[in-house]
Length: 168
Image (tube, rainbow, N blue to C red):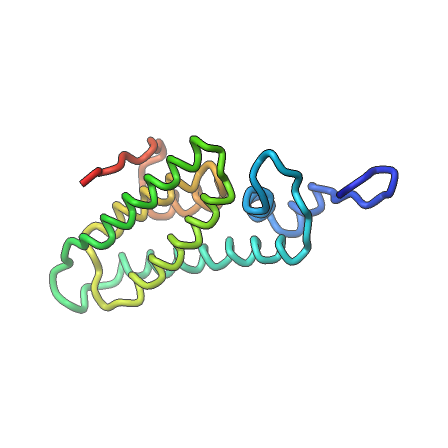
């Protein structure tokens, strides 16, 4: 634990300058439930920073995929993307209502892994962009700067409403 008298405190401004506000938020929210104290670790901070960087790289790859000419004919509707997105949105909503931010961070890692697999296929799904926009919108409370930057690059819309879940 930190103490001013022991001079073992962490300067948040220094952390933000070194790693960025989103990485600091991600680390603090991923560390523990809100009712517990944050256990600061340099390794955890670096891991959060690296995740933000990995997600940015994934975003760039998704943009390339969406802008590239079709290799396999007409894009098809992906039931898999639709189902995954709605399940994740439902989990995020439940976790937000319970203030379980560390669970949402775990969901973000699942989202990263899923979309990374999706873009490694040759097929571009009709509903990839629509579902990716929903995911980015749901990320705004957790990593607002990254989510906003990604949304600005992929959409002309500047006003985002919370995504609706398709219960089917």
